[in-house]
Amino acid sequence: MTDDTIDEDAPIFAIATAAELAGMHPQTLRQYDRLGLVIPSRTKGGSRRYSVHDVALLREVGRLSADGMSLPAIARIIELENRVRELHGRVQDLEARMQAELARRPGARVFAAGSTGSVITLRSGTRVRRATDVVIWRPRRDLPHTDE
Image (cartoon, rainbow, N blue to C red; front, side):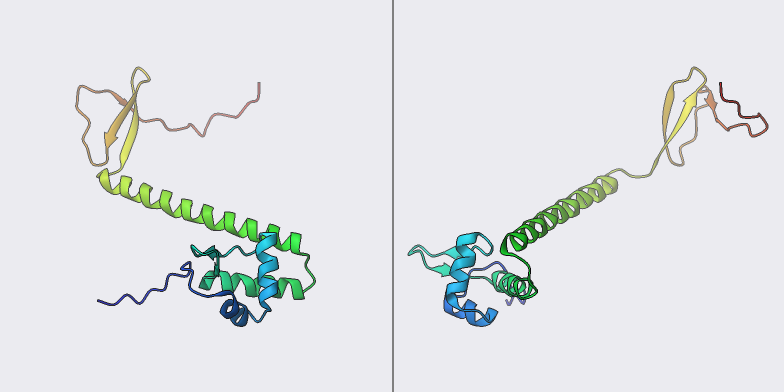
């Protein structure tokens, strides 16, 4: 059984390999770690381990820095991108939960007003009992609109 998906967050690269992949010096990666820009995982012995995602982030930090952006500004961008990613995940979760709830409820619901003003819930396609008075509200278009 093979799994073709790659876990982009798996800490697999030592600092020298990550630095080479990102096109940076290992000391730069240490500095970014100290500043909180790219924080790698740590082994039990304390060695840094970078993921594929970390390497991509290092490349992005390098690109933004080369374009003249300050490291505090880059840190803020990374923070905001992480927040967007988190919120995107929450939206996907809520959409999935909403779809599951809609699938659990067969048919759309229709609301009508009773003769006393009470709200009556009807399932789509359900016939109204003859004993129930249902008022269908339609706005009259022939009355002039007045502001009082």
